[in-house]
Image (cartoon, rainbow, N blue to C red):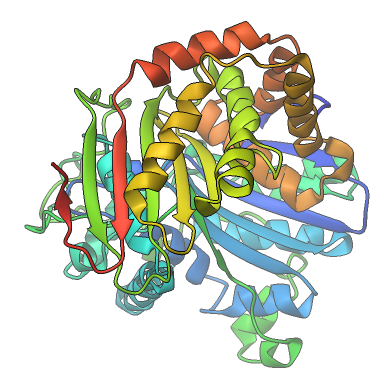
Length: 492
């Protein structure tokens, strides 16, 4: 992402949008809402995820599944993504289908069908999405990283949610949450790919400009919470679920489907909020999360033991708290991560896999969200090893970065690898859309990556080591030991 991104435009209704041309024959539209897992009310983990699936499911002019069929018949594909900080719908189509896609996205934004039938379907989809990561034999370790890595922040719940906390949720409450959190003036529409910029500007105004933020009826109060105290989440910062539909042969149907299929010519020229989608005040009130939530600091190091009954090899993870994504130190953290864990040439792989043969594979993840972050060093033990010695060796190698000299060659190589990762000439329209959307939702700046790169180019080894001594060497660490068939609990 070496070139500056285009400036964000604002429609009269508050909706933000930007367009970035990318060579090729495809176009991508990404709709990002600044509402994610951290915004779920207490006791309703997964409500943002559920609402996103309702938006993606059906609307006034699109029957359930029809959007997916239209996209598939055009040769496109789509995904929905739920993150701790945002929710997103992204669709790729051949460039000549872009206007139709923009109409359909405006229709989904303005007129989602939220009723008993669509709510039941969305609940089932959410439950399936929550179950999918559990097929991974190391899912329990991934979940423990979030649940215990964060101490008090809602990030510890993850983004997917807990189906049991949504089982008794009523339609009116979901409409209320949608009206408060998935408004057009809390969204960014990103268009990337091959298109005429003047045409895109006209289409954005035509199809999205008349959408009005839904009005809440009565006073906003607190959404009723369940008595369930447990929460569950997803491993990793976000989860993408395929939304591609069947072949074009499945697109035939009612006259309503035909009208939507011929959009934008015969579709509504000015999407508005339909009466069926208007929120009704539930018997109990709705309260959004505070504008900003602060994470507690870990008071001391801690070790937790987990049992992985289905995993083929033991594993270990070390978790440190790191600053939020928009912190000024973020480029330094990125360079340190590259020195230790980016590619096969990182220090961790060189030592623990190639030299000492303690680990089968390992990784170093920098998970920075809008309000807090984690650094996670995770290793899969080699055959014959247990989790504890792997964790000890992993920690020793991570801490070594603070004092062992970093050569100019090593530093230049890490910077070069980061540059290659963000080389805009190799990016597709889909990758551009995803990166710009995440930068806006998490960093508050679509140009954040380019600014990071400019800062990294000037960083010295001394600056990396100074940060490491302050935030890693002197900071408490959470150690997760995941052996096969051992008892779980707090290690002595």
